[in-house]
Structures are given as structure tokens and as C-alpha cells.
Length: 113
Ligand code: AMP
Ligand code: ZN
Image (cartoon, rainbow, N blue to C red; front, side):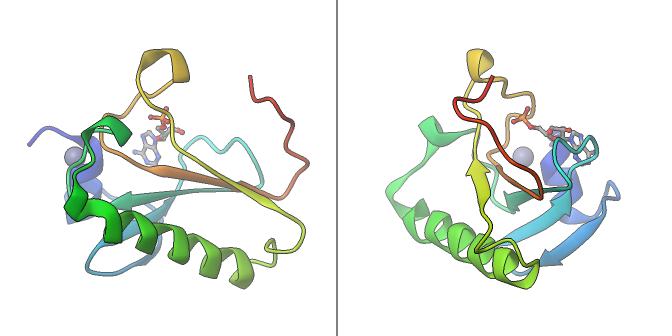
């Protein structure tokens, strides 16, 4: 498997791992766009939202609940944070293994660029 995030999830490629469990790994983004910029990456290789199967519903819910826990731990739950995934070229997806960006620590504008 030549997928970057599969290799990070398996430990084959090092990353700054914030936390992990049997379903996902959370790492610091190598090119942070905010003071807090984490990537929540499921261990399962899923290309993007378009590739989700019914059996992935629990996994996606779990990822969101881990994000909520991290937001509270990092003290950004009340101030605010953004959880986003980019899907395909026009949205800027560059790694084709589904992941959720968690951004916080500054005022985040809307709409995004
Ligand atoms: P996207 O463009 O939505 O597919 O997001 C991919 C993200 O992965 C970008 O924000 C990159 O900065 C980040 N990224 C790429 N390679 C690495 C890496 N080796 N370790 C951590 N983050 C990475
Ligand atoms: Zn992968």
C-alpha cells in the first residue's frame, strides 16, 4: 500500500502522534494552518466521503466524538474549533485517505478560501 496515511497509521512513517486507538490515529499536521491543527485519520483506508460504506457510520461518529474530547482537553471547546474534510480536487484534497482537519486557536473565517 503506497498510501501516506496508511503508512503513518501503521507507524511505517513517523508523525507527531497526539493520541490513537484501535480505530484511528490523531497527528499534528506537518504544515499547520492554525495554532492547533490536527488530523484525525481512521486506520481503515477510505478514500474520502464518497467512498464511505454503511459499516463506516460508527467509525465516523467515533472520530467526531474523539474530536470533541480533544477540543475539551485542549481548551478550545468553548472558544470554537473547526472539523473539516476536503473531498477531491476543487476542495483541495491532497491525500486520498479520508481525514478530518481539526483547526483552532485563532479566529477562523467563513466562508473558507
Ligand atoms: P488535504 O489537503 O485535505 O488532503 O490534507 C492533507 C494534509 O496532510 C495537509 O494539511 C498536509 O499539511 C498534511 N500532511 C501531508 N503530509 C503529512 C505528514 N507526513 N505528516 C503530517 N501531515 C501531513
Ligand atoms: Zn490509506
